[in-house]
Each structure stands twice: as structure tokens, then as C-alpha cells.
Image 1 (cartoon, rainbow, N blue to C red):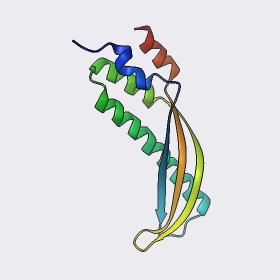
Image 2: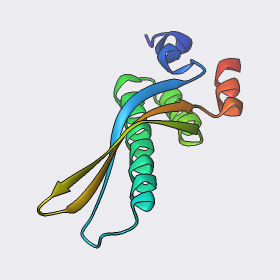
Image 3: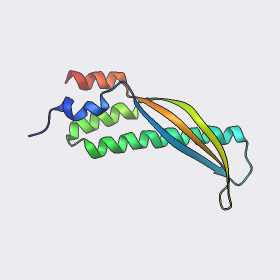
Image 4: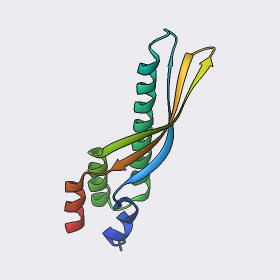
Length: 118
């Protein structure tokens, strides 16, 4: 017997999923620092969303529920707050920008509402 849908989905039915995660951008061409910071922040967002989606794929056993949650989080709103930015020199990859960001992932409210009405 499948577990109740809301019970299985409960970790993902919150208003937001918040992660602190590092993003990185390395360049050998000596590109603009602000461009590197932006790329490192985008990398943080991508990693945070990938982590949440992977978690949903792994933990959600009900295929229909998994599909709905993935759709809601694929259309999520991501807000990023930069906590720390560092420059590191890597002999192989060049100048690296490492940004530690707090990423808030809010699933698509319309899709989540549809899921809760089921």
C-alpha cells in the first residue's frame, strides 16, 4: 500500500526550501571579476536546484507524486543571497571565484496548489 500522498510529500510542501551552497567560476582569460561573481552565483542556484530535484527523485516513491513535485520545483522561483565571495588561484583553471550563497527555492504555487487539491 502506497503511503499517503501528503505525508510522503510533506518535506517539499513548505513555502521554501533553503540551502547554503558554494558555486564556482574559473577562468584562464582574466575575465571581468563581476562576470565571474555572477557566474558563480548562477552555479550556486543550479547546484541547489539539482540537489532538491535529486532529493525528490530519490525519496518520493509514488511516481505520480514525484512527477508533480518535479514539475513544481522545475518551475520554482529562486532567490539568492550571497554570504561570501572569495578569489582563489588554481594553477590549472586560472582565477576562480567561489561564492557561498543562501538559495531559497519556492516551488510554483499553482502546481503545488493543484497537488494539494488532489
